[in-house]
Length: 78
Image (cartoon, rainbow, N blue to C red):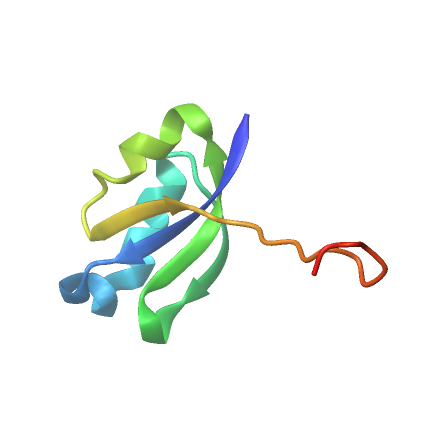
């Protein structure tokens, strides 16, 4: 099963973020977006690969993406 994730790149690896992206792809991540100025990479990976992505050199953190949905305007939620 695939899971959407956000990768935070370590401060000392931001200047080589393309190498981190390549290593993540080799580890099974499907990269969707690379936000170079802030050192964030988004994408998805099979649940079985997510934990291993945290061991990639240059990765500071791996977090699941959260989804927030507001209730419909006509709902009774106030």
